[in-house]
Image 1 (cartoon, rainbow, N blue to C red):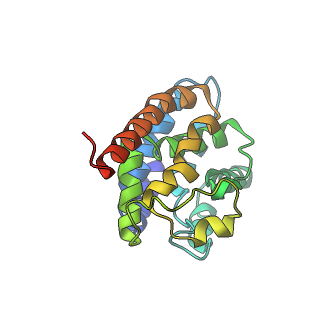
Image 2 (tube, helix red, strand yellow; image 1 turned 90 degrees about the vertical axis):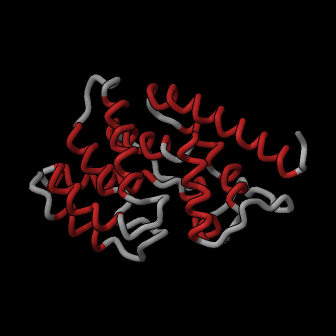
Length: 207
C-alpha cells in the first residue's frame, strides 16, 4: 500500500517547485523513519501514509482539500485510522505560529520530521528555492520579522527569504516534540545561525 501511494503522489508533487517536490517527501519520510526507530510504540503505517499525503493539498499550492480527501478515502484502512491521518496532516503546518496541537505520538513524529526538513542546510536551500519561485528578495535589511501574526497575515505577505528565517525557521528547534527530533534539530539550527552570520558579513563586504 505504501508503494502504491508513493506512485500516486509522486506525480502530484512533481508539479510543485523544488521546495515541496517529491524529494522533500522522501526526506521527510526518512526523518520519520529515524524518529520512529527511537520510539517504543507508534502506528508506523499511519505515520508513513501521513508523510506521503501531508502536502498534497498544501495551501501554498491548492485552494481545496478535495485531492487529499480522495486519496485518504481510497485507502484500504479503517475509518478511525483515516481520521487520524486527517488530524495529523492538519497539525503539521506552522501557520504563522497558529498551529493546531499534535495530540498523538504519530502526529508528533510527522510534524518533527517535516520541520527537520525546514531547517539546516536543506532548509536553507528550500527557503531560497521557494523564494525564487515566488519572486521574493533574497534579503531586506529594512524589513522587520513579525513575531505575532494571524495565519492570513503569515501567508499573504511576501517577505524576503532571510526574513522567513526569523519568522519561522529559527523558532522550530524549540517547537520539536520528540526527543529524537530535538536532538536532530540542534545541529541543523546551529548551521542556520552560522549561515546567517556569514551572510550578514558578506552583505556588508566584510572579510
